[in-house]
Image (cartoon, helix red, strand yellow):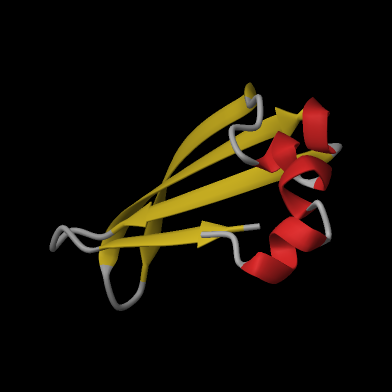
Length: 74
């Protein structure tokens, strides 16, 4: 939520593109990895291009045999 300071500095206008940025899926890769401690692990990596904010988003999901999911975002 914006604060009075944000409104006074027109932050809602300067960062409007971040409110709902366009995301284009560039790459989706799924791998099965065998680890010494966890057995087989599924790893899914999704890369998105975000042209409106001149950025790229990389999401990495690691799914373990017990159902645990580790999510890493860069």
